[in-house]
Length: 262
Image (tube, rainbow, N blue to C red; front, side):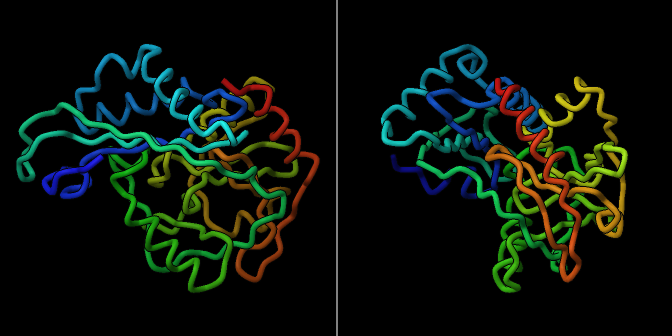
């Protein structure tokens, strides 16, 4: 496939993307991906065709995944952008899209060592809760991660509140087992696994709090973990500080989410 030079994703980053895990021939959390695509389309004023909401797109993505039948776990990336030309004022709200698939590995069990990102901060907007428009922010954080030798970087908002990691949402548990995660007002992505963790926790009667909190709160937590569509991974170190890891509690979240796959 050849994309024209006036492609609006290339020229203006005028679109969004979804990363979907394919596990044992199924699209994990597909209904939640559809929900976030609706939110992104509304925010960007994109006219998404009906095939995205019927079973047609799902069938096409599964067909693409089956072409790579050598992998048990795969990663699909669905890229959606506004078609047509124009400068900042587009000529149409119709879309074009492209999907790619590749094999991937199960998420490692080893805990993460993360640093606090100094170069960039998150910023809440009507576009910050889905993937694509703010991608350069995470690219710069990724460069800082590489240069400093961390596994990941903790991003803060402009007021210094906890927001997220480069490609994961952040969670922590207190000594009562209450679950905390940064509020969307920090500019964090409203991740697919974030939605499922909050939903599952509420079903289990676990107190859930979406908060504005400072990094020091993680030092008092009983367990801190990162989560995205690839799974859940504990965080063991924040800069030079060792964090508590309640392995039993982390495993309960992992087990619960395996059962809630949809």
